[in-house]
Length: 141
Image: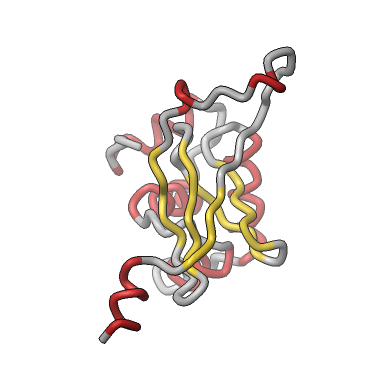
């Protein structure tokens, strides 16, 4: 996403979201920390700067972003919900060693699944799991 931090308020307004300070900081976190965070990760990072922030506020704000289609939910593991503000079609890779989640570029126009030709696709998810190159490098040393 190529959104500048100073444009977040206008971006939220353009998606019918009141740009409160907390909402703007949560969205700023999503676009500047491309780590596909959980509610807990965002909360721990922002509570130092916003002492009145609650996990419920983070959760509700992220749900609003998903509802307004400016963020997506990523569920690679059943017990872990992560969020991503990149709305372009792409995949994800989760490292089984360090738990980092990486974006994977996907050429969507090259994916042709004939059995879905007469279907309407409303969501897409492409996930891979394995060991990332950083962890593989550590293991080889």
